[in-house]
Length: 268
Image (cartoon, rainbow, N blue to C red; front, side, top):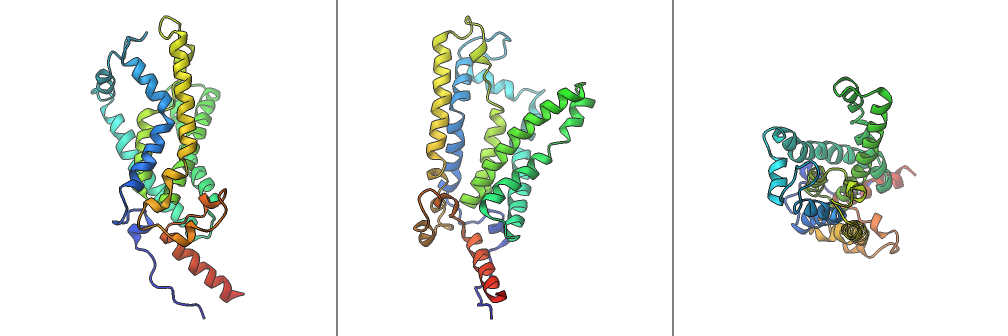
């Protein structure tokens, strides 16, 4: 007989919206995301202090005003509010939970989720050809880069969701990444009258610092023990140091794994 293990987690818990979520489990992954963009943030800071060739940015206040002018208002709201909420709810809160309930491992969930997320953006190919007048070859190259970028982000968002069990943390990271966009490396190739060699060196250092800070904080800042509802000392103390980061399932995963193991034992 299969031992009774009690009722499973609620629907809100499965979606990563448990009322017991702690503030650090939301803010620390966001801090980790911000650290990756130290380089682009420094570029924005430099542009806020100078008049660039296009005359777009004159001050930090002007940069934000540019983001929220009348022409860009609805596009910006879609990118930093609507898209992060609904895409994370569907691709992380729904798709990942279905993969988990189907028995897929942590690693496969991080891979398959982004593949589906990237496939959902293929329709941009038609948009570039029909609306923007791009050739098919150019549109394929643009969409291929977009798929790469979105798939990498989706893997990161899946990692956050699986580690922290928090959909809000994934939404916050998504909103920040959409606000920043693809990192702009053009200052490194800009004329010297805009960015001298000393400024370019500082930009490179800012990018390196951001990447190093992100790599160092990847596991500590997504530690499930920051979330009181997901902490489990027995899990935290098991596994090797190198693999332990992928053996931190939240409580809803523990419940499913217990049930699956009991079914497998009964069937054998």
